[in-house]
Amino acid sequence: MPRHKIKEMDRVYGFDEVALAPGDITINPDQTDIGFAIGPHTLSIPILASAMDGIVDPAFAVKLGGLGGLAILNLEGVQTRYENAGEILAQIAGTPEEEVTSLMQKVYSEPIKESLVSRRIREIKEGGAICAVSITPANTKRLAPIARDAGMDILVVQSTVTTARHISKSYRGLILPELCQQMSLPVIVGNCCTYSAALDLMRTGIDGILVGVGPGAACTTREVIGVGVPQISATLECASARETYLKESGKYVSVITDGGIRTGGDLCKAFAAGADAVMIGSPLAQSEEAPGKGYHWGMAHPHPALPRGTRIRVGTIASLEQILLGPTSVTNGTQNLVGALRTGMGVCSARTIKEMHGVRMVIAPAIRTEGKHFQAIQSAP
Image (cartoon, rainbow, N blue to C red):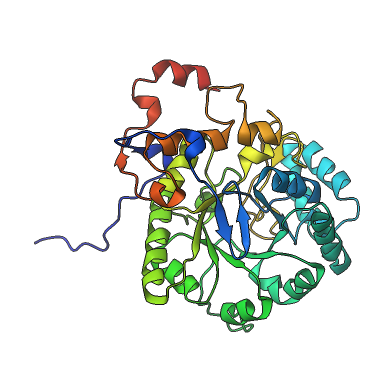
């Protein structure tokens, strides 16, 4: 008697499992166009910094803005809970591993202060940068109007997993179409990793969507609750939803791959999978300007009952400018990320990010198993 199959499983792919095929012509890297537009704002480099306390403070946001990127400030983090945010961050960085989760649960129990929300936004705006802030759905109704009135330019509504439809007996959830109408500025929402959830979110009127559940270096969602989809497949699904929504509405919603990007190669693969921009965490946490002092931790780390992030030591390797724009002092792809993107596009015959979406991708052996024996030995801990 034949067995009954309970379910079918899809084969999905992460960065290490795919490669890009070169194009038939090559283009000088300086002839590529990597600009990214969201609402009325245009970035010269399509890189966003993750809304994590170890990465973005107002000074970092101003610095990245000056280099052409965009930093997202966590409006529910240390910066809006403490006047002396730098001292708190130094305390987190200096705490032994076995004590840090308890410390962070205590640190993040301090109430958010509305006056600090306004002040941090003003600091970024006074520094001449576009101001983007991140809020969780539970706090959006309270904090978004304050942030708007203080002068924010872009609102990011972010949680571990975001959907357009939410079932709850306890409260009336955040209604995204209402929020988009009330804000009258670009709204980015995330995170998601499937075609159907992305399409539902796009239909609410948002301008951008964050793709990624579980891939980040400081995220332990896959370990703690078993949820997540590897980034190449997740980006492909959400990019497919973008094309479906474009055909039905005429509106183009930007897809932003968020998490798991470590090298220039990962960056190039994200764009080939359909990303319009990327959000990066740990590579930028390694910069001299990052407030985490060589440490990086996820937004879900201080959860009072089920922490789903971990503090990791990433070290400090170079200035933010060197990590993004070079010149590189290493050969492992972790510096000059923008140069890697331009070069990859040139090799793949892509003049624009839109053309990069059409680059051929192939399923490939992990690079460490394909003739890279000595590299694997040298990079082993």
